[in-house]
Image 1: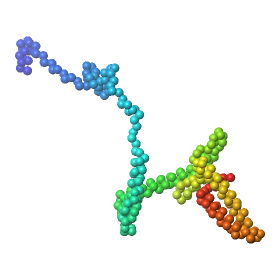
Image 2: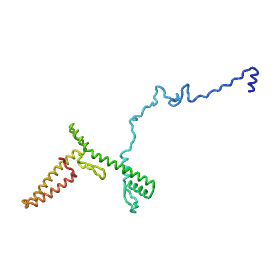
Image 3: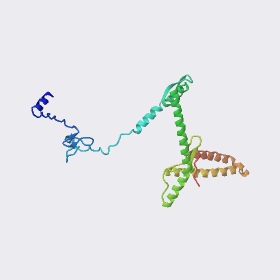
Image 4: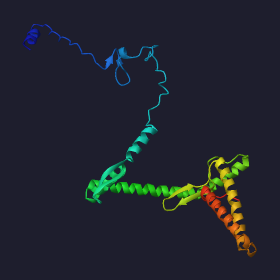
Length: 256
């Protein structure tokens, strides 16, 4: 300030302040704004040059993810149902049971002792299991009721287009529904070869049953009193054959 007053009195202009150089803006480069989606020019791909000079590895496009194999699933289930020796507190001795059963029993015992965490886990398991069983029961019952309609539709279409019925499609009369377990099963032949075999056995069964009725009638006839011994032997032999045929067919009979 003293020097400026002296210069002013002497008629001299005060010296101008020395200009300070500005620090470069890191977000700008020769008028080019650097930011998201705008990398520095020295790190950008050069025009006409690939960013991957070596190219895609062979087979990389069609390479799929590695999934668990059926062997792993099989191993897990085998281990879960492997039988072990476990302590049974109710009988005060060791018993043999699958690992999964021992785990569930241990959980139930802890829940009975009042452990809140075990009680919650057990109740959740019971609730989910009952819901799954109820859903499966309803689905199976619905399929059992609707299957004859589906079968007749398939049968009509096969006749319309002159095609054979699909292999492995059981006849509705061959299905049985278990109202206690909610499961249905087929007890009749499924393949064409098995059906032909069962039909032949069924024809033989029909013939022997007719023959047996005739033998029963002959046995009641007084005129055959002198040959009752022969008739009884024939009845015994044919009853045995009928029993064997029924066992082989397991309740299935050829539809007339």
